[in-house]
Image (cartoon, rainbow, N blue to C red; front, side, top):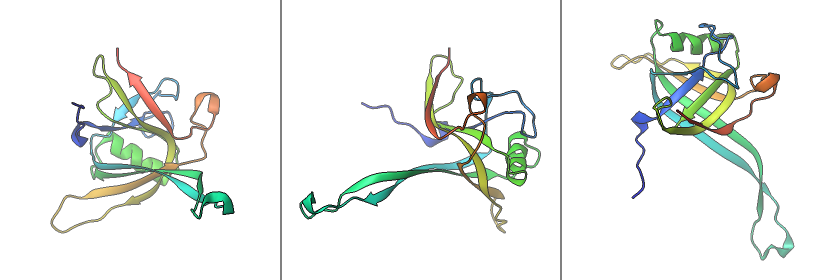
Length: 167
């Protein structure tokens, strides 16, 4: 029987780098992953554009090839201006700072486990804060890949499937 995964055991991590409010020492090669514990719902979307490559020899069928990939992470975060990771995210949005995030399938750091998920250098393109009368205050974030120098030796860090096994 396959092992079921439950959303509450999955994590969204932020690599604590020098460019953030907390001014950490994480790098692409040696990340300092910090869970965004205030994250509620996280959605990782991967889509590829469809380019019509139909030809007359296609047996009256439309034929397609894949085009550009579009990776987006949408996350709802509880509003807490006293939280370090919340402040890192807020500063990254307002300063237009590139960040390194990893949406892992379960808690990284548990001895003998392997965590996997999408990792990407990105920017926060939406930082919206609804203020409902009768509910918690949250911030809705939209993260998309950016032109960045977060990779090894200042290289572009594109979205990738990332795994880490904890000793």
